[in-house]
Length: 308
Image 1 (cartoon, rainbow, N blue to C red):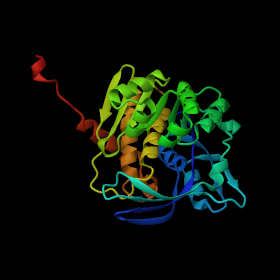
Image 2: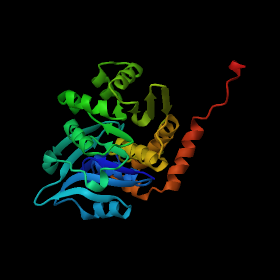
Image 3: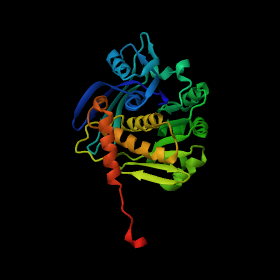
Image 4: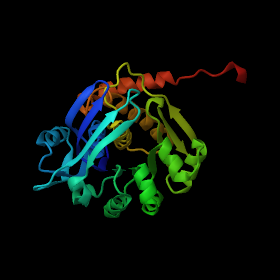
């Protein structure tokens, strides 16, 4: 099993959905991705928190074997906070308040113990900081990055430099269209591959996820769920499950990437079944495997008689 380095935010979220509200929930892209990846691999987490961030969250990660040497607690500081409210369809969150606090001065320092990590997930942080992390690594086998519309607009040149140095990029439909200036998703993915990555992960929420490489396209539906309580962190859990599985497997070929897409989809499906990361903390590898097998059965096809 290889080690994973995850760099991203640790936050306190106040979330309202049609099913309830949670104040000061443990959150942040780094936290969700780590909770997912640590189901399968040994994880080093790099992030920054204030004095107000609950020790219980860190203890929960430590119990899963996560190395927290790279998490800086700023004395007297306040943690990154986000307040949002989801619409009835649960596909869009209106941001009501964002307080960067100590995250505004985040200066990621990768511990020596993590610089040899073979798998790296650069969660949604400023592209210049993603480059700073890459400069500290010894030579990972696979790097996956995430981004958002704000960075595409305000830090495009740095983002292009990141894309030139990573193996994979995870985006949603609007982000890849904005980045490439191309409305057609197939063409947009091809344009993005020309920027450097060897694969693209398209996160499509309730419509599943796609893997695009220079060799072809692979798509999976969303795992069917009777109840969705809180979509916060689903994309980060997807990425964490994806890279955690690759680290567990120790392979990065196309077959491995397809399997990882299914594991990421299954992990994200568990995340949304409760508020915050509560469902991820209860998820076992047996549960994950069962969801993987259900997804595999959903896309099984027999040979078509038309070809005979």
